[in-house]
Length: 84
Ligand SMILES: [Zn+2]
Ligand SMILES: [Zn+2]
Image (cartoon, rainbow, N blue to C red; front, side, top):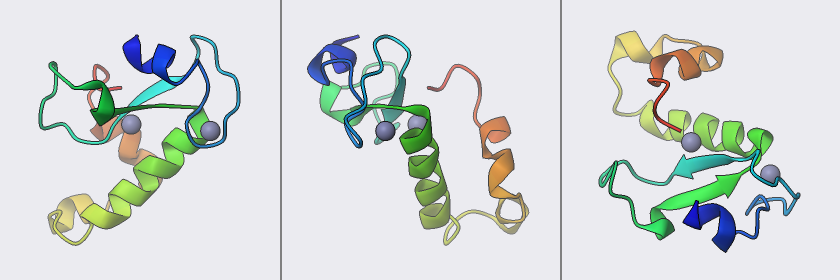
């Protein structure tokens, strides 16, 4: 909630107005459940999916071969639904 207010209910990437309908993206899961606001970004769906594709590409260096073989479009299925 704080994240949305801080972002003025707008996507921090493209500045489009989202109201309450945007996504909160974790920059890190290090403090998951107890995040500092600066660890979260308020994003629209499109910018959010771009973040995850970038994240995915970064992680392909270290992810196991079995995960690496997943197509990017399946990434959402790898993320438990309680993770924003
Ligand atoms: Zn956006
Ligand atoms: Zn995210």
